[in-house]
Length: 160
Image (tube, rainbow, N blue to C red; front, side, top):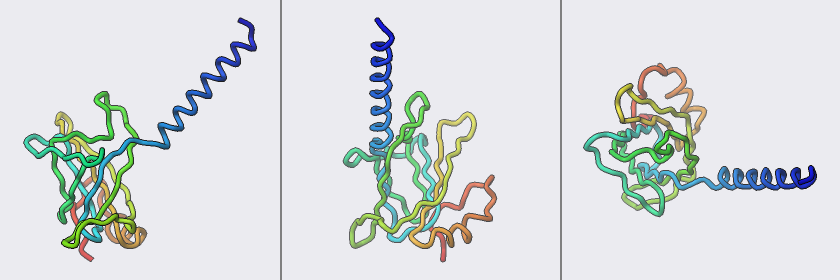
C-alpha cells in the first residue's frame, strides 16, 4: 500500500473513534432517579452494597432512590456508576420532588458538591452529596464551607 492509502485509512479510523467517543460522552446511560421530599435542601447519604438492605427498583431504565427527610438511603444494590471492573460509567440522573400532592420534576433544585467513601475491607460504599432548592452560595456558606471534611456530613434536610 502506498502512504496516501495508509494515511486515509488511519484518518478514517481516527474520525470514527472520535465520533464514537462523542456519542458516548454526550449520550450517557440512564443513572438514578432521585425522589426527594418537596423543597429538600441538605445532605443525601446513599450507602450501596449494604448486607440485608432492600434492593433498589428500576423505573424506565433508571435506578429509583426515594430519599426520606433524614437523607439516608441504604441498599444492597450496587452503584450504577461503576462497572464490575471498577471503571467509571458516565450516566445522567433525574431529580423529582414528592409530597402528598404527588410527584413533580425538581426544576429549581441546584446541585452542591459531594464525594464517596468506603471503609477498607468492606463492600459497602457511601455517596455523600448535597442539594438545595434555595440559594446555592448561601447554603454553601451556611451549611458546608466550615464543616470538617474528614467527618461524615450530617445527613438529612437542613434546618433553616
